[in-house]
Length: 354
Ligand SMILES: C[S@@+](CC[C@H](N)C(=O)[O-])C[C@H]1O[C@@H](n2cnc3c(N)ncnc32)[C@H](O)[C@@H]1O
Ligand code: SF4
Ligand code: SF4
Image (cartoon, rainbow, N blue to C red; front, side):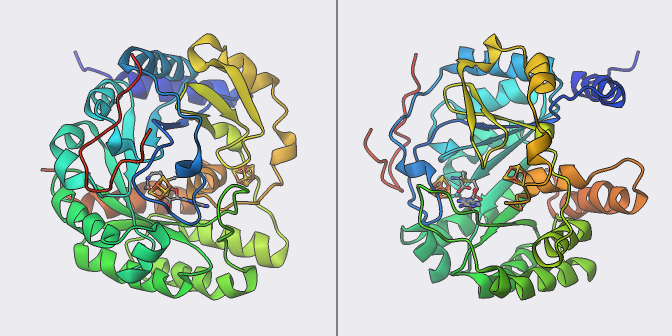
């Protein structure tokens, strides 16, 4: 008898629910910690002092709750997820239940690769520019070198993508990063920095950003290994420069903080943070009670993890072809599967709470 992965059954089940008008999350993002070994200018997370980590058993309770809510894709991030000693065990549990991904700054990647690669479907390594530009934005010398060494090691073990954040200081590096991805023979994904109140304001001026977005869209059209669809870049241009908004659907993605609580309506706005861990919440009930309508016209951020799913429609064949067929082929083709700040090069210091 054919074996059907639980994640596929969940997708079918969720599609039926969505057709019936009920909302449920498809993708989950989970911060394993806030702590980090780098100090990026645009990032609020390494500055937080309210770290509260969960142990493996509670991480599994989060996964069970997410699976029950209908989630199929679970992405881990932070802070720096590779700082956690138990990240390999957490990923093993996650991979049995979901399609998995992880985003890292790459500093510890080479060392921790054997623990994490077998349990990942996709790995993102952040790169904010080439050479000194990346090190300046990340606040620690040799960050660029370490990230590239990590990617050279990981690309033959797990499909690997560069994650590039466009800020006001690196607008002229986007094309260089695309060229680097081509030289490394891997894909890349792009996002525009959002100004968090607790980080340095780094989002680019909209007028200065426009040529970069147009250039990236043209590179995507001509076959550059960008994961975003042409529609993604068009949606940014239409909304931010032509006054034609996309309809944001933040409910497609659920966010879980390091202590297991749900952050809503989205990763960026963080207006609602429940007091209970997700395993004590009826997610489906909350999802269908919450008033999402005010966020549909928000368009404040252009995070691909929200914007791309918001654009997705099974009836839009062009987007389906680009996003699902070409996007998938792109990365598979390019990546064959075969409470002291920790010092960047130091041993993994984080002890998860019992
Ligand atoms: C918060 S980091 C966590 C994972 C890991 N430490 C890393 O840097 O990849 C996840 C992603 O968010 C991006 N990021 C950081 N600050 C941002 C901001 N203000 N706006 C948009 N993206 C941001 C980073 O560049 C990184 O690609
Ligand atoms: S490496 Fe990631 S979590 Fe750490 S400061 Fe930079 S963006 Fe933030
Ligand atoms: S556009 Fe607004 S509601 Fe949508 S994900 Fe971005 S900040 Fe959140």
